[in-house]
Amino acid sequence: MGTIRDWPAAERPREKLLDHGPQALSDAELLAIFLRTGVSGKTAVDLARDLLNSYGGLRALLEADRRHFCATHGLGIAKYAQLQAVLEMARRHLAEQLRRENPLENPDVTRRYLASRLRHLPHEIFACLFLDNRHRVISYEELFRGTIDGASVYPREVVKRALHHNAAAVILAHNHPSGVAEPSRADMQLTRRLVDALALVDIRVLDHFIIGDGDGVSLAERGCL
Image 1 (cartoon, one colour):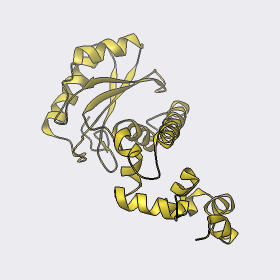
Image 2: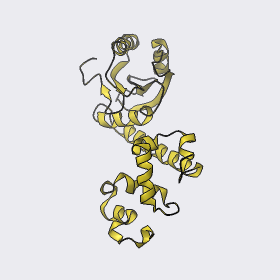
Image 3: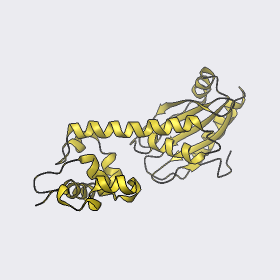
Image 4: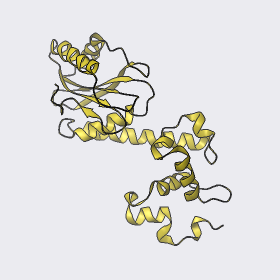
């Protein structure tokens, strides 16, 4: 069987990316560039297709735990470390972009950043973006960790952290491990409690994002704040 080097240049993933940009590549072609090499009897593209079929898609592969990932034929600990580095660079790139912009003026960047931090987690996490008086990001913190069913959130601790950062405003966020981002009655009640608690120290709640499998839900966009 021939290798990718034997393919016409226009069909090789790396050359295709350089000529047309990464958006022109399929998931399998992008993954093949990451893998770099195939296994006996399979090119990197063939291996990438097999992996995507086995995991059910790119996201499931990228979010696989270490044990499962490293046990997969064609992968291993070196590839796992490489992948984690790539994912962390992507998160830091989004964080830098978020710090350069006003989260209120570009809510999509905020949504993407929060999804990158929370969407893959198997347990519920409650987090805050602390903002200055010009609504620039000071810090992101994960404050409470729960089970697959929920997290206990203490308004007093949220206020304490906001004062620590000298924040003028906050954006709240938590994930639903079920993947369904629709806010529950408990979510709405919690949001109101936090709005009231933070208002006592003149700190505004600008939004509360709920992160699921698809696009996160913004309570501000829903008119719930």
